[in-house]
Image: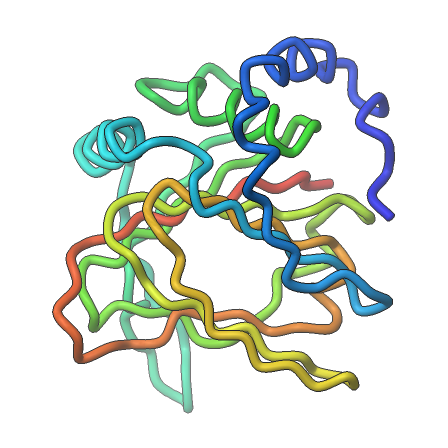
Length: 207
């Protein structure tokens, strides 16, 4: 179970926003809810005009950077661009608006915001789980999708075996509990289908 939101002083601001988000409660899809953890999906956290405005703002203004990492004894480019904002600092542009809506939907504040830009179908992220040693135990990870639809693969590491292929729609929110980072891998595979750019905005509670 997730810890109560009252653990954070900032939750009062979040609770005040929840009243504006009642329309979200009717379309939450529970994908997993058992001893392996909980995964939920809201296909319509925000409308298309809002997600498009957020996407265009982040695309133009986020501090995008490329990264390199060592794989198979050689250094290679990470196949996507990345950016980040600390959630407890002054944030530019649409970031405070996004943060407020996601925190209200999850009924808790987050302490970091990470962004991935998938420029086309050649950009991807291999199956992985988040580093648990960097996360506050018990708190979920929320992934907001903007721009183009991309497929996420979610694969269980333990029984019961599950293979979930989920098309993350623009304006959607995927929430994975802390426990699922032990029991599932998730990734965005490359695709030969023509796809436009997508931004994934990951909200976490870090130590």
